Structures are given as C-alpha cells and as structure tokens.
Length: 111
Image 1 (tube, rainbow, N blue to C red):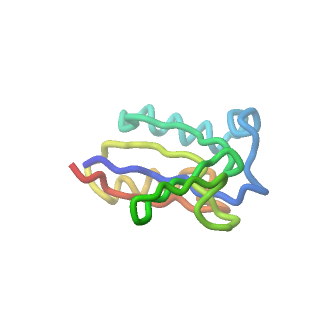
Image 2 (tube, rainbow, N blue to C red; image 1 turned 120 degrees about the vertical axis):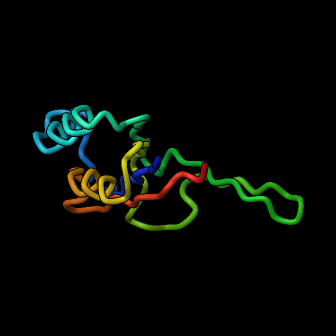
C-alpha cells in the first residue's frame, strides 16, 4: 500500500540541507529506506515564507503569500513509500529524525 509521510517540523529548529545530510540518524533512515526498497519519491520543501495559498470563494480566486494558518509546525517535506502495511509505514516514520522533535504524519494514498 502506498503512503505519504508528511514530515512536520518547527521552522525555527529545522536543520539546513547540509546539516541534515551529515546527520547520522538521517543517514541511517535513508539507508533503511534503500534497504527496504520502499521509497517512491521524496522531496524537502522550502520554508513557509516561500508558500502561496490559493482559495476559491464564490467564483473569486484569493491568493495569499505564506501558509494557510499561522503556526510553528509546518510540512517541511514529503516521502511517498510503498509498504506492506501500516505497521511498516509506522516503523519507517518512527525512524525519521524529525519524529524526535516534530512529527511524521502518515496518510494512505487514495488509489
């Protein structure tokens, strides 16, 4: 089953790309994904300051800079995995570095 892992973090704590790449916990997590052969796609997202939010109300398109809501937590990246079941997706999510101070939300893909 395919799952999207929403990697959520507090932007004030988010490591740089270089720090993340050098982190042994993150390296181990990436190696685990490789060993399992489950990663279909992954991408780190730019900070919320680079976001654009679009809403459509009564035929009018409303465009705003930044995220939909003011919050410290944000989706900092996504990883799409194809796992045997939810238990495997939970194991993978628990191993992500951001699960130690942020969160990893797991969503099944609607196919």
